[in-house]
Image (cartoon, rainbow, N blue to C red; front, top):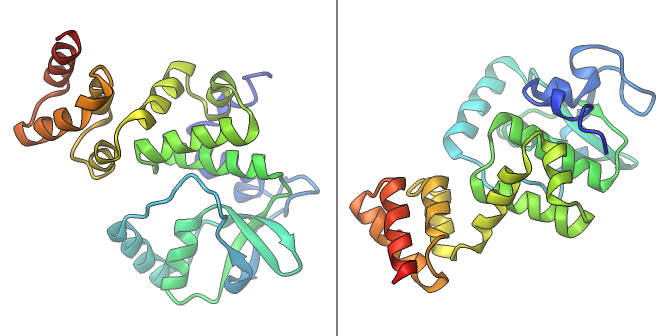
Length: 229
C-alpha cells in the first residue's frame, strides 16, 4: 500500500476529502458540486469516530448557521431512494437541525463502509475534533472490523505507527481513568504515564494525580516507583 496518496491529504481540511467542495472536478461517482437535500433524508452513521459533541461549540455553530446558513457542505453517501448517510459533518447536521433548516448542501460520494469510516476518521483527525479515547476507539474499529494493521491505519490517517500504537494502549486504562481523560482532568501524557503502573494501581494513582495536580513527569516517576515496588 503506497503512503504518498494519503499523507499529503492531511492538513488541507475537508477539501481534501470532498473533491467537489472547492471545485467542480469530481468523479462520476461523486456529485460534481454541492447538492441541496432535505434534512430529513440525511441520517447519522451508526458507527462514526466522534461520539461526543461539545454543547457550547454546537450552540455556537447553530447560531452561525442561523445567521449565515450552512457554508460548508456535509459529505454523505446514498443508501437508497431519498436516504443518505453522513460520512463527515455530523456536527454541522446537528447544528442545522437545531437552527431550523429544512435542507442543507451536501456532496455525495459512492464509497464502501470501510472507506466511509476512514474518511470520517481522517476529517476528525484533521480538525483535532476527537478526544484521545474516541481516536483510540476509531483505530481499534479499523483494526477489528476491517483487519487493518497499525501500520496501515497510520498510513491512512497520516500519523506514524508509534502514535497509533500509543493511542491504542489508552484503551487498557480503567474506565474511571478514561473518563478523567475525556473530561480533561488528565492529559494523554498523564494517561500514558499511568500505563507504566500495574493494572490494579492505575485508578488509585490517577485519583491522586488529579487531587495533587501532578505533572506528567511526576506521574511517570510515581508509576515507575509503584511498578518497581
